[in-house]
Length: 218
Image (cartoon, rainbow, N blue to C red; front, top):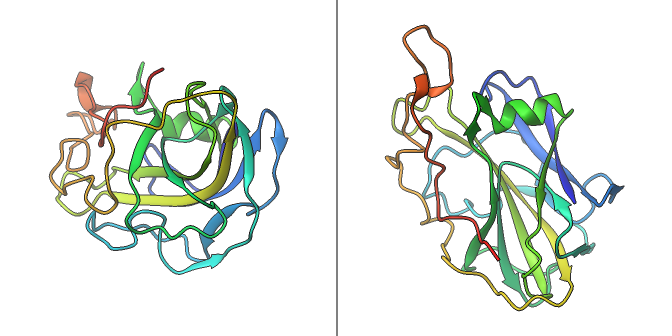
């Protein structure tokens, strides 16, 4: 499975804006905004305690589609969380317990967003095979860090898709977090200077710590 984020002029780690709009499962495009809860605005959230931090605010594009995802399928953007729900098409976004299933930060001198741009807006990950087959909201999040050396200046872009995992897995998640609540404004992966002395945005040889809990492993 892969998840597409529409790119509107990213540079390094996102100086512009993005909206997650499509899901493709094993190469099959599920359609524009099908099963994805999205706003009309592409503006980020910068307050980690915003009440709408789970799936974004002012959601205008909603439908009843639930996307079937076989466990083990190829998927992708930058950080991906799941929250188990009774019905993905109608579930509310508050009060859910989220667990991370994928993350990609800075590796070999390349940010996850750089790879997404090179792939024409697509970023891939494998949905863990052990995940229990039920309905989930899938939260897709990108963080822009070009101004993040100052607290409150990291920019968060997130939307949620409505999915139904199939397969024979039994793992219902671990290391659960809530949104808002999972991050603090001064977390080292949120308030961070990504530039070296020459102005290159690749941490100057330092390790970047991805926010949130570790991703689930089977």
